[in-house]
Length: 203
Image (cartoon, rainbow, N blue to C red; front, top):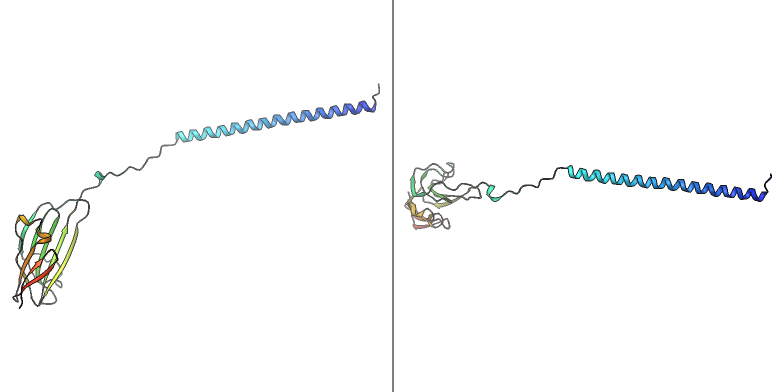
């Protein structure tokens, strides 16, 4: 049985439409499969990241140093009553003071003061006083200071009077007066509050 041209055209059209539908169905299936795989990959990555975060050791915060952990520095272990010391150990080189005739000292738990009397090492006519101070604190290292006071034309100086005894261990450091005399006859007073000398008599 022979088919007309019109019938053949209809059959061809149906075949084309059917092939297009099958192709679209196959493409849709592949797309959904790819999306599912992507979702699974994303979920797997998130799960792995979460597990890694849980397994990672917790970071330790730096411990704060408390004030109590800082070592406290010692003060002067004992009081030093005010006293005049004959033939003390040299405080400086012989070019600075030579000889060292005598000294006066006093100490509390927080302050230690010494006044040395003598003559300048390079000028025999220059009387010289050297004041050394040490300050003690619980939270700072010892801070030593030194001052030099000269008396021209006096020659070697000797301390003759100064605050004495245990009752001056606190007050004498900054308000004490140290009297001196010299081999040339000059006398004077050293005021520790301002580290200056007032002469009593002229040669």
